[in-house]
Amino acid sequence: MARAYHGNPRTVNYVQSQFMLISRIIKFDYKSVKMVMIRRAVTSRLPTDYGEFQLHAYLEERDSNQDRVHLALVKGVVETGPPPLVRVHSECLTGEVLFSSRCDCGKQLDRALSAIGRSSSGILIYLRQEGRGIGLLNKLEAYNLQDKGFDTVDANLHLGFEPDQREYSVAVNVLEDLQVREVRLLTNNPDKVTAFNQSNVKVIERIPLVINSTSENAGYLETKRKRLGHF
Picture 1: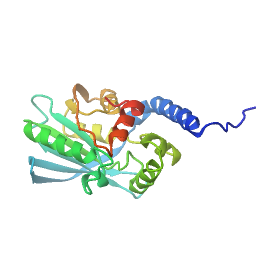
Picture 2: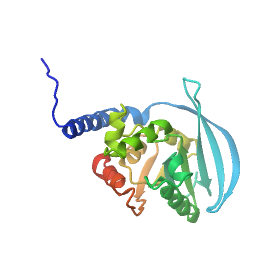
Picture 3: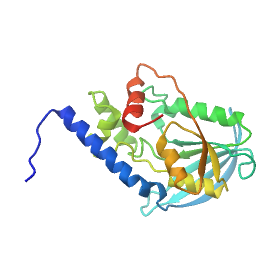
């Protein structure tokens, strides 16, 4: 008969996190290739500080009434010629709009758009996956736990979520709609590389996105490297 364990909470958290990470690896193949329904709803011209883009809005049609709109900012001709520079970026209101220093999301978005703007062709795919997929309210709850000593992984686990609940099938479908089959991927996240290489879109080059840490986000970035396997 199994017995309850009442040991050190940090040990319990570590064991739980390792179990969740292993479970995530086992399930990742399913998460990477699951079918989603999207359709290109609107295309507009979007001049920005980084150059001029074509902005495509994609509607993800879900079983619930909570349909989500994802975006693709396209620079130049991407369906022919050399593989475009691609960034898959997940929504972060606190980092991108409120300039939070808890994370590096806002700076990553700025750096990615700058790099794409300098390229002959490129795509930024903006996915509505706030808080690594747990949503804004839960992300703020996770912030409160981090202020009590939890790292970003253990905070998610404590709230009943996986360390990272994002998936990238929408991004794959967007690239297929844009007739892109090979990409130079701007990322530090191995999950994105795996998701693409398990699809019809292949990563021919991974380009790191280097952001200097601050006193506020140094621990967060270190946790992403050590516990989430980021490059």
